[in-house]
Length: 150
Image (cartoon, rainbow, N blue to C red; front, side, top):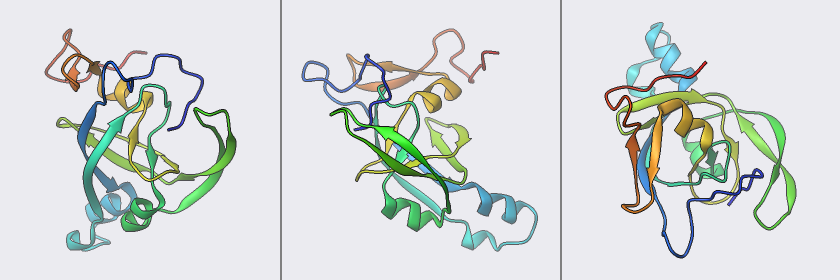
């Protein structure tokens, strides 16, 4: 797992893992479909289970999913892992990330062999981690829709 200098991690022996269903969509494809430049049948979408990792800042996708979605790797970023290693990892073009009926768009890091949902998605979607029940829940202050803090 990636560790971006956060100390409050969701995964622990006492709490277990929090996993959620996530729908990933190539954001460039969606724009092209909306503009009539791509057949809707060619929109690349991938659904899978993802590990919620509050120790990770950004969302992380394995290269296999990046390739299935047809995402271009735009640049490299330095990632720091939980074991202290640092290495450059790819940064993709935008991906639409949908969890619990809420969606956001962000560039993702390319590493590992499973999808990790990091803090930026949780904050943007206004979702909280319910460790006791091993799930995500909408912010109780506004459960119907996400509210952005400025």
